[in-house]
Structures are given as C-alpha cells and as structure tokens.
Amino acid sequence: MKLINNLIIQIIPFLPKFFVKIVASPYIAGISDNEMLNKVQQLNDKGFKVAIDILGEHVETENEANEVTNRYISIYNEISKRNLSANISIKLTHIGQDLGLEVVRNNLTRLVQAARKNNNFLRLDMENTPYTSETIKLYKEMFEDYNQIGIVIQAYLLRSLDDVKSLSNEKFNVRICKGIYVENPELVLNDYDDIRQNFIRLVKEAINNGSYVGIATHDDFVIDNLYEWIIQNNISKNQFEFQVLHGVPMKKKLKKLMNEGNTVRVYLPYGDNWYDYSVRRLKENPKMAGYIIKNLFLSIFRIK
Image (cartoon, rainbow, N blue to C red; front, side, top):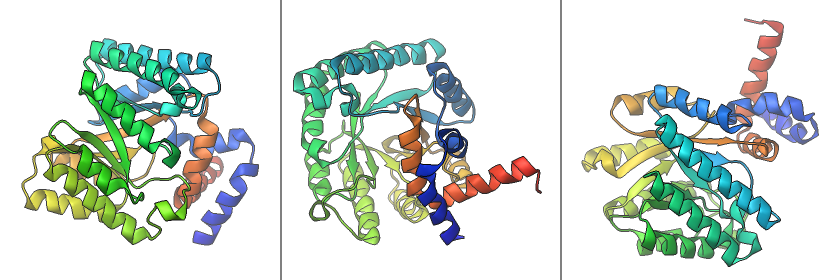
C-alpha cells in the first residue's frame, strides 16, 4: 500500500487540476469567503474553534498585498457579525514581505487594528528561514501595540529553543509545529525522532514559562506524550490548545480530547490558490492521498 500511495504522489503534478481538486477537497474549505465562513460555522457547531488562512504567499505587487490585507479585514468583520469562534493566521509574504519592510509593516499594522477593533486574535505564520528573524522582529513591534497577537515556532529549526526561551512569558502565544519547508541541512534537525523530541521540549519550555501554546501536530506519539505530561503536572487548560489541519483524518482522537474539556482548533485554508497547497499537502501525506482516491473510486463505482 505504501508503494501505491507513493506512486500516487509522483503522478499528482501531472493530473488534471479538476482531479487534484477532488482528491484534495477534504483539505480545503472552498474558494469564496462565504464558503469558508459557512465551513467555520459547521466546525463551530461541532465544538471546534478555527484559524482562517487565505491560501497564497509571495505576492508580487503592492496592489496584491493590499487586496489580501483588505480581504482579511473583511473576514474579521464577518467573524464578529456572525459571532463565529475563529481567528486569523497570515503569512507575511502574502501581505508584502518580499516588497519591503514598509509595505509589510503598513499592512500588518492595518490587520492588527482590525483585530483590535473586533476584539480578535492574529497569528503570524512562520515561513522559511530567510524570513524567520524579520517575522519575529515584526511580531515584537506589533505586540507592543496589541498583545492579542501570536507567532509560530518550527520544531525542526536548530534556533527554535533559543527563540522560545527569549520570547516566552505570560503574554506569549505561540503555535508549535514541526515545520515543512525544505531548508539548508545545517539549519535544521534532520532526524525525525529528534524533531519529535524538540517539539515536546519547546512546548514544555513555553508552558513552564507561563505562555499559551497551540500544539499543532497530527502525530499521536507527540500528542499522547504531551497530554500525559500536561495531566501529570496539572497544567491549566487555559494554557494550551490542540491544533490540526482541516481534513486530516483523526476524528476519534479529536473527539476524545474535546470530550475531556480541551480546546481543539482547526486550521482552515481556502481560496483561489488551492492547487499548490493541495499538491504540497498530498505529497506530505501519501497515506491521505491513497485514502481519498480509494474512497473516490468506491463512490464512483458504488463498491461497498
């Protein structure tokens, strides 16, 4: 089965877009804002909180960066209007980071103002290492003006423990994830078990320093290890939440966590730029690709 899944991953870039869209649809919350907002409501009704992400990065013009920023501001207003339990997670290259510090700072300031106006939260996603230091710098600048803002730290980066130690305090809100970008091997942990252990170490370090942590992983080993530690150390449920990608099949685990009073937040990507994201996600998770395609064919041919 592993061989078949990997074969599927190899041929995905050569398949028609409409087919990739069908295969990847569990990962994506739609194209339009309204489709996404309806999905947020559905997830809220099931007990999930949501982090919204408009798919895209590395815009090429200021107009594009401004349009993305305006769209996020509109989403903040809709979240309030519809009384949804959701916040926003952005990539700084999507609002102009490649176009200069002034462009991205201006757009980020506008988003912080919109978050404040709507009494909501803003998360800065972390991209690859050329952007890490500047992203942290901008986070610190914005935090001075509005503290309902957070950042992401990637467990596979060698620098991450130092970053968590320097940033952690009672007002620090961080999402810990493993990291997905292809990086210089000298900058990252290259062993899977080492990344797992560093993930666990980063979460414990942040929580022990009073920070709020989004534990963003689908790895049962990491979740179970950290949850056992949380229980043993009587960590308040107000200090952490579990975060998962929309569409990743782990419903029993999520239901169990929520039934025990834990917050679970779904990272909900959507928008016109669904194709590149979908191909990347399916490459990262060959089992998911095989699972989806199997069920697609069963549905088409009505095989029980």
